[in-house]
Amino acid sequence: MPTGLTKDVGWNIGVSKTVPYTADEVWAFVMSPAGVAVWLGEGAELTDGATYETVDGTVGEVRSLHAHGRVRLTWQPADWSHETTVQVTVTGSGSKAVLRFHQERLADAAERERQRAHWAAVMTAVVARLDGGE
Image (cartoon, rainbow, N blue to C red; front, side):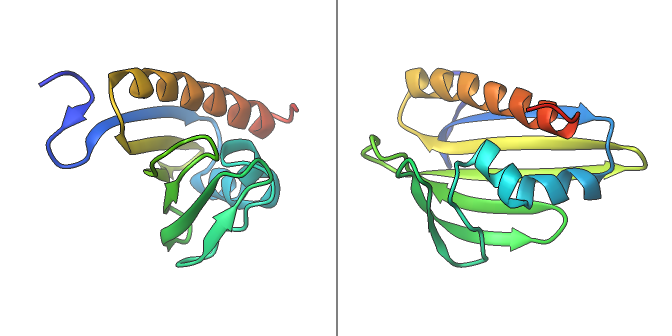
């Protein structure tokens, strides 16, 4: 089976990074309006079980939201014909946390590679904001 293809969720991609912040600090940012705008898009409000829509037309539903640790949602940009599932998790101990973006149910290997680049850029942007940048 090719890398990134599973029998349960099809094509998937994950990007993670250890950052020099507590898990609480990272979670507070990624779930704040400013943080959600960075990784999901402006205009989305995330509440467990609720639907959302970003300013650019990405739509989805929050499937589960576990305070201080994990949010799982469907994700469909306006120009996509199918939805995928995105999960954001924050774990850690002490002054270090691991932030993970995972996306599954991608259409094919090419979409997986595009999303690898997307989530890598998102990670860079989130870390820059955590570090006090824009």
